Amino acid sequence: MQAERLIEEEWKLERARMTVIAQRPELIDWYARRGYRDTGETAPFPYGDARFGAPKRDDLYFIILEKALAV
Image (cartoon, rainbow, N blue to C red; front, side):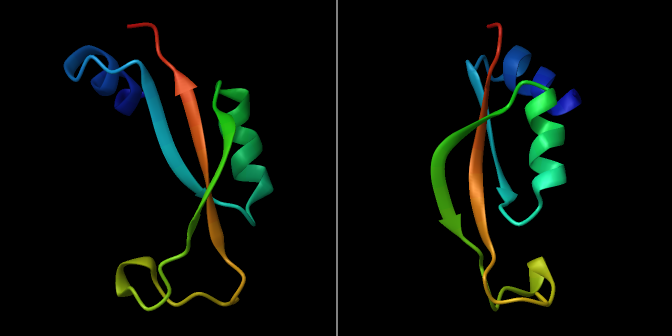
């Protein structure tokens, strides 16, 4: 992925981290197949922030995924 190349080559970081909505297991599985692992950390969903649209449910939260890069 282009973002991983930037993180690795330009920023010289050893890990890529991202947040994914926990209620999207198919998306979490997609990232897992690309080397991302669940860190066990979570973050709240930003209800009321228009940048994230109008959620249709009230139980959303993010999980934190991480992938080691070959720096």
